[in-house]
Image (cartoon, rainbow, N blue to C red; front, side, top):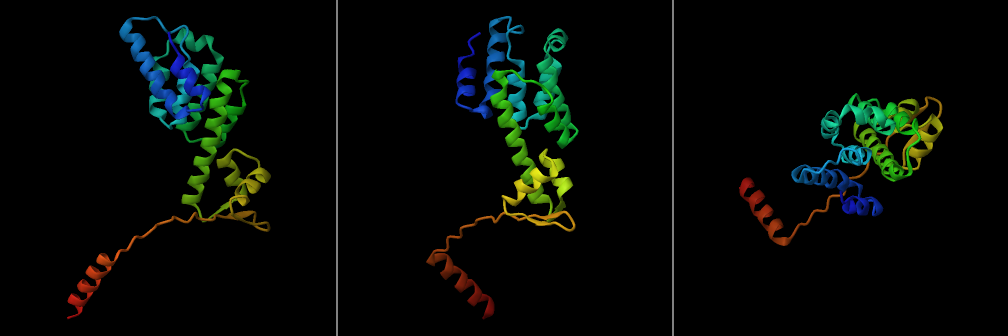
Length: 197
């Protein structure tokens, strides 16, 4: 199998393309009748799905992997644990599954990128869902201890109430640029004038 496209995507950290590239390569191998299962980069393929937040495809991919391969590749089982934690929305468990295995060098780049991306997703979730949250709960979502979480969010403008150990969320301003040209203003003026008279 020619994994040049996959190797290139990994080298350029184009992790959002990994799942699609692997899917294409797998379809190509199946169409050509090539036996690819022994040399297939299952862990990379799996992480590609997780990176683009496609947990359903990851679950179906897991089901398609032969049991002999699952049994002989502990790293594949470890990445499946991450997917299971994502599925049940065990946020702290996701981070524990990521840090609880000694990953090979080939996987570390995409795994670190996924971990950072997941943390940013969780941070955005907190911003959109909460106006105040406890330091403990924020740490749970961000996969950090209390002090790390406090430093992480205060660096992004949140306010800490030390007495209550609560964080006040700084909502991100949504920049909306209104373009109002004179013709729109004229039409609006005429409309209001018409309503008043």
